[in-house]
Image (cartoon, rainbow, N blue to C red; front, side, top):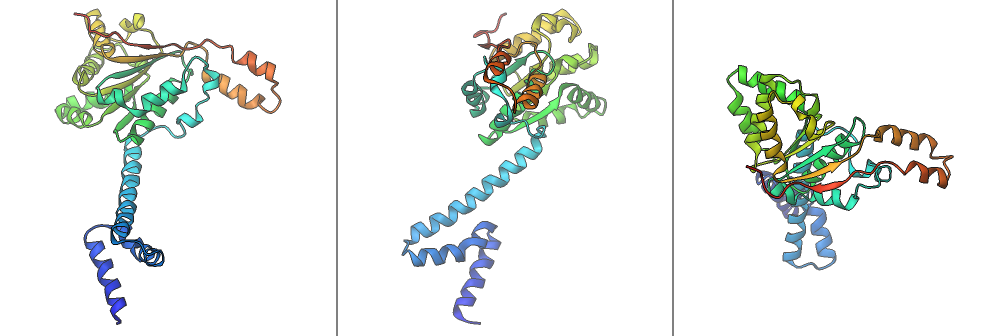
Length: 281
């Protein structure tokens, strides 16, 4: 074995032992380029380190996206903002950056069935993960069932602790939770647990005025709303189905005239508002 081969073997084995797989795969190719272009030792090392860091970042992102259980295909680039002209893409992109998550605020999305709430909630969660946060997307009713099962098994504190590690919990379709004392009390417990500590994204097809049909009593309803809106961004989508408009647009796109498209765009626009600055007492 030549000196060069011995050195190559030693370097590769050392990089594997140090758990630097990207460096291990790339160092010979990078070394050849460094020699060809007369790089300094500092630049050679810097390039190898950047390759390793980039790969680790990609692995972390892939793992976080898998753990988040986001519905497939629900990203900003697949959301047709033109069908909801009152919704600012810039505003949503700002939400994806995650400053509000660092401040432990909430994001509440209201609108009728099919108006795009779940799609946008998933897209925001995807952006948060890309920004370095953790998220979990789950139907509210499914999570309530999990919490109830954990309570029966005396494992509720452990599950709440696990959920507490997630920066942003996306509760989809809160309005479908049954008005049952055990279900709504455990949902209220989760909301209280995360209040001013972790963030929530909630989608709901019912305005606050109808939340008495979700929670078991008026006191719990007021307390839940109070905690959610104290630090919150609220997006309202109206009632016309985004899904139906999007489907109609895709079907008609090859033959739709500019005038027809303009007519289709005259749909009720959502409003974007900031939640109350102070919690009522």
